[in-house]
Image 1 (tube, rainbow, N blue to C red):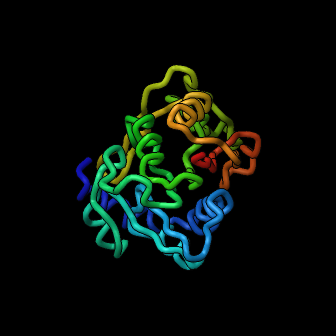
Image 2: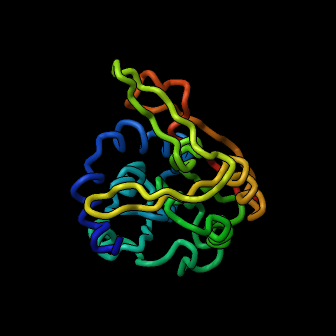
Image 3: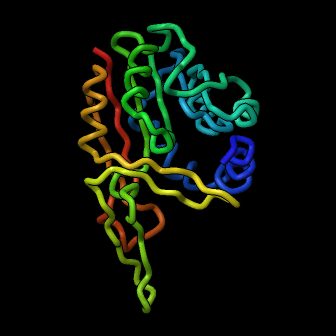
Amino acid sequence: MSWSELFEWWVSEVSEDPAYEEVVTPLLLQVLQPESGSRYLDVGCGEGRVMRTVEFRGASVVGLDLSYELVSRAGSGVVADMARMPMRDHSFPGVYSVLTLEHVADHETFFSEAARVTTPGGVLALVINHPTWTAPGSTPIADSEGEILWRPGKYFSGGSSEVPAGESTVTFHHRSLGELLNAAAAAGWSLEEMVEQPHHGFDEQAGIPRLLACRWRRP
């Protein structure tokens, strides 16, 4: 999918998803704990929906995204790859990313780049689709009576899945929870909080984690 196609799909189908206001953004705020007057880097900022909420808390935010069209809508940002952030060392007290890391092939570089641009003592907050969901083949299914069941995928195998997005697809890269936490630790991040949240649309799946949120600190 080209970034121009991604823009059209995002604006038409994702940017107005009420789950952002009701679930995703509150989960980020819970782990990020944004401070008024502080400065944050939003990695994978999209059209700026989450940025505006963090700014409403009194913080300033710089967005970073691969799509020029989305950054233009955000109002303030940089078009760049999160694996090569064009920011100076130790330039942000906080970095966060929402539902973006699972679309990036090199998560180790993301954690090391985030550490490079964050000031000592600064934080990294992350909200992603839970690894239980990104495992290839994992999906909720409905039986003949309409009950929602869970089909587990290949959790320990790694790999990726192509998910429909408009007339094209978006790639979801799968890593186990252990692989993610170890990559963050290897980049020097110290975990302070981890939150696993069930699906917000399927009451029958309350025992299956849907979202994962973490806050790390750079010693």
